[in-house]
Structures are given as structure tokens and as C-alpha cells.
Length: 307
Image (tube, rainbow, N blue to C red; front, top):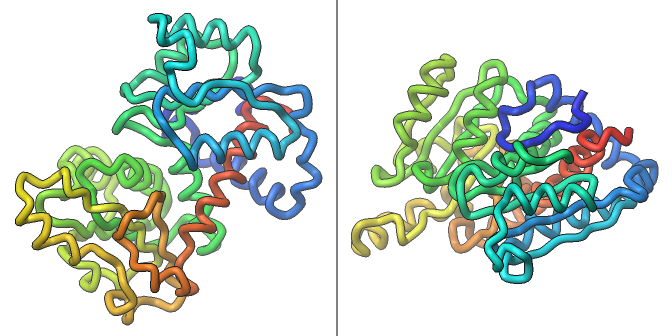
């Protein structure tokens, strides 16, 4: 069903196809040894045109744990890109050597262009401020694991909702699940874009609320998804200084939250979650990072059709 497919944006796969990936991830988590050789003699090419730590390591770990091998570059100056080679020619050449490719690129749409010229599956590992679909798969798998399903959930997204690609993708993905309710927590300057409201929430009939502080929404939430309020997004320093502490999560702000609420963050964290939260049983962001490896293992195995 998924063999030979590309993953460029989260909506490329149906809910049923996502469930296939999640069930594979369940199997890997339960019995990793069973999957330790499924990609033997397969090669993953990592084409990272901009720096990455978590995403690149996660993909490389995923392939190695499946018994496969990894080739690639972690910055473009070490490749023929420095000589002016086009994305189309790069992917055509890589497809001669590798079985599957993962690409991160600063320009929006670059992985899509690669997929149009590729004979092997292409996975988008982030293209500018556009899409980061495997982060969305990671978020969904983590929610599914800790909440038991992806239906009937109240999700709070907090911080930079205007520019945050992880938030936009998560809202789009969760809008496909029954009885989702979204709480959007942000300063006025970083509110969710109107097109997300109109094209996703309103069009699909998703119930939503807007809040200016974490405390307003926290008691209602099943999931609190934190992102960074970025200093560079403000027109002046005074507004940033006035608002920044409002969106730093500490124990006081969630003292009335549900005991089984989970706290997620795509990482890296700067200062938006106080370190005192790390010991709270509701903090799941480092487990979330591990889920990223498992879901990428499941994705690679399914796109290669080795199961």
C-alpha cells in the first residue's frame, strides 16, 4: 500500500495509511529484534542542505536499527551542490545508489521537486518554514501512545502559532480525527494565521478557542504542545520582554491541569519550559523524541515494502 510512495507533507497519507505506519511502530517498540534485519542490504541517502541534529540522527538511527546502511551529506558544501548541481540531477544520481532518500532543505518545495524526478521514495525532513511531516507523525504516534487514541482530544498549542510549522501541521493532521478541539495560546503578534482558521478549523468544523495565557486553557487540556516564542518575531524589544514570561511553562501554570495531561515539544527547547517540569510525570517531550525514531523506522520499512 505504501511501497514506493513519497512523504512530502503530512496529508499525503490517509488516516488509514497513517494507522498502518503506527501499527508497525507499535510492533517495533514491542519487539525491536524482530525488525533488526528487515532493511539489510538497503541504503538510506540523507541529503541535508541545512544543519540538523535530532532529525538527521533520528533517521540515521532508524535505518541502522533496521539493519540498513546510511550514506549522504550533512551540509551542502561537502556535495556537488557547491558546484551548482540542481536538485533534479542530485536526486537522479542518488537514486542510482540508494534505495530511499531523506531531504532537508531551506527552500520550500525542494523535496517535492526531488520527488518528481526520483525513482526511489523521497521523505521530506523539513523544507524551510513549510512542512516537517515526520515531526507530525512523531507527534501523532506520541499522542496515540499516551492517550490511547487520536479521537475526542482537547489540544492546546502554545507559543509561536504564526510561524510555527510544527503547529500548523499538527492542527491539519488532528483536524481529520473525530471530535478534536483546539486551544490556541499565543500573544496577539503570534496568533494562528487566518488561512489555518478558515481552511482547516472552520472548513472542517473543528471546535477552537483562543487564549492569551497558559492558565486560561490548561485545566481543559488533554495535551499541551509547547513551542518557542521567538524574540526575532517581535517588532520591538519592549513587547518581547513584556510577554515572554507569559509563555514559559512552569508548575504554577499547570497546577489545575488534568493529572493525565501530556506535555509535548518538538525540541530544541530554549527557555519556554522550565527545567522543574522535566520531573513532572506529564512531561513527555523526551519520550516524544524517541517516538520519532520509531515512527521513522516504521515509515522507512513501509516505503521500502520490506515487511
